[in-house]
Image (cartoon, rainbow, N blue to C red; front, top):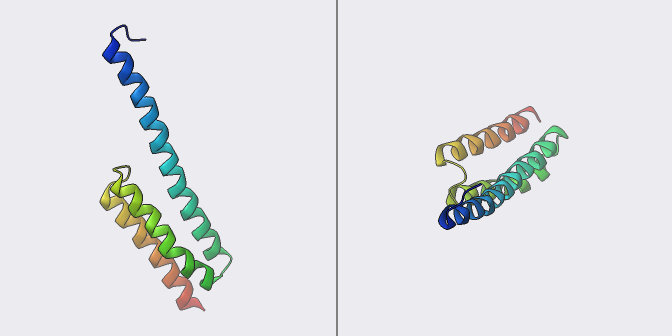
Length: 90
């Protein structure tokens, strides 16, 4: 445990930031999971409705600096690719 006042403050601030970042990451994972569940059930309409919402959550995480923009682009690309594959099957 730090002894210096500024170091103590950094510990508190870092814990708070870590909590906020984990909450946003969890939100992203939950949105992706809901979208993937819609795809797995074969519900194209629900998946099309969830895609913009999921992309929005991912973009929000990028704007907060929690995800790298290339990582987000990779995630969004995979989401769209899976939806297109489901549409092509049907």
